[in-house]
Length: 120
Picture (cartoon, rainbow, N blue to C red):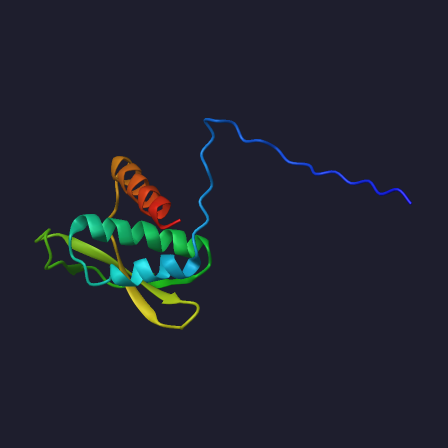
C-alpha cells in the first residue's frame, strides 16, 4: 500500500499587512470600557470600534436620537447619538457620532491597529 499526500500553502509578501485576529470578547470589552470616557479621542475611538462591531454583526444599529447639546469638552456643539443594541446580551447602548474627517479616520484606524496588535 502506497500513501501520498501534500501540503499546499502560499507565502505572503514581506510588505503585505498581516491580518489581525482578535477575540470578539476583547473588542466588546474595550467598547464597554470606553462608554464613560468623555475625551474626544476616546469618543472617536469608540465610534470606530462600534462600526467595526457592526461589521462583525456583534452590535445592531437601531436609530438616531434627536440632536442634543453636548456638555463635554466641545461645548456648544450638537451631538448625534446612535442607539445600538449588543446582540449577545440585548443591552441598549448609545454611541456619539463625532463626524470624523478623513484625517481623523486615519489616525483612529492607526490607533486601533496598534492597540489590537498589542492585544494579539
